[in-house]
Image (cartoon, rainbow, N blue to C red; front, side, top):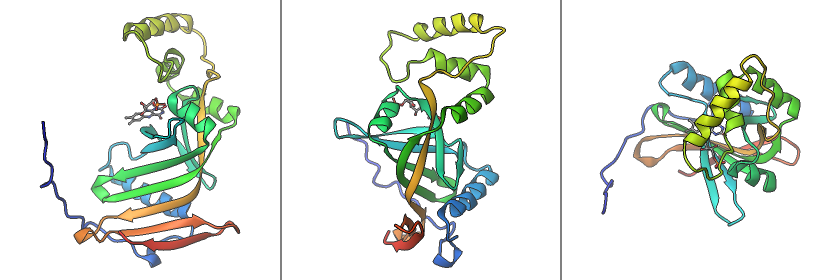
Length: 215
Ligand SMILES: Cc1cc2nc3c(=O)[nH]c(=O)nc-3n(C[C@H](O)[C@H](O)[C@H](O)COP(=O)(O)O)c2cc1C
């Protein structure tokens, strides 16, 4: 079976990125882009990003997670620490995040070191989640092989009963990761595949060096 997508082509011509338009701080630049995209409502889940981790077998692995906050320290998402990604990031605390916002023809790629968030921060976020999501975190041994869907449904029904009139505490194996950027690239699609790319790299003196990359 062969599917040929050679004729899939798109002209990228919505915008441009120039050095003088860039903020000196990449987190501020990210904030500007993120708000433009999010406010436009043309992208579903503007905070969806891929997170790539290193694996013991030498293969990288990517999956989508939701960015839940960002500030001058970095980018935060939540997950199960015993999942594939949880184990991988605890063992090799390096990650690559990426966003693709098609209606803006924009991509952002972040490379950085990973830290577990302090438990108290994860607890505060967990407490703010709807009860269904809290119970979902308790029910699912994320990334483990399970027999069938019933395993999940039965456990959820049990827990719904147990926690009918009770608050749900954050499970120990669940919480946030902070990705502290060392390099952030901003990519804006342009005609003739001559896209605009700028990368910010963190220097030893903690300043950011900005360079244009060839597309
Ligand atoms: C739009 C979207 C958002 C997701 N958000 C999260 C998230 O915030 N945290 C999470 O653990 N998994 C999230 N997932 C599920 C992950 O992609 C993945 O299936 C799961 O975390 C298990 O990955 P792993 O086995 O590589 O650890 C999301 C999936 C999609 C498609």
